[in-house]
Image 1 (cartoon, helix red, strand yellow):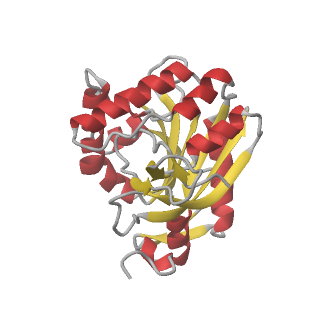
Image 2 (cartoon, rainbow, N blue to C red; image 1 turned 45 degrees about the vertical axis):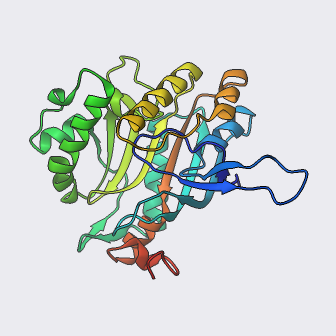
Length: 283
């Protein structure tokens, strides 16, 4: 188990971390400073991969500031795992098998029973937008930030309603502006990233992982700039992680994060994640 308190919460433009002040009470101790509850164990797990851990998984709590609603909570349970030598194609097959077996082949989502029989459809983001009546090519912006804003608006306004009417599917082939930390396809036009959704409810987010240290730093800096431009807090770069990437190297691998509270919610046939949490935040 990696620790929940980290010196850097990463730079994701959309996720707000909890900041926790550390103040020394005994000597000798490290100097006081702000720490962050991790929003994902990704960086620590990738540091283990750099050190030759081989396939690894972790199940534990993660924390995200400001998230509260039927599908969100400030603290929830995540399963995250990495497979050296795999790509997102092998990983989607494993994810669908695990999910289908965990819920015994069916869930109840948005008031209807959905049978989970692998293989689930693989639908590129462009195909999904087309089915929802949107030309994805028109969403490409002149810069990453502009493209993200266009995609997110179209996703919420047009794609979410279409996805809500579907069963289980994998969204694949995201545009580079939405690559997050996924590797780009050889032609550079899409990212090797996927999301598993059931009736439009996101359960898992995975990728063939980026391995280039310089590109990691560039994407982090892009996200930091986006956070600053929208008035969000800008946390330090994960320099220890970047050092390991540069000096040790991340092996080619695929990784995925799966929200267990949402999976339990669907398995139980209820509508809110707080209905499957003991003593949730607002009770």
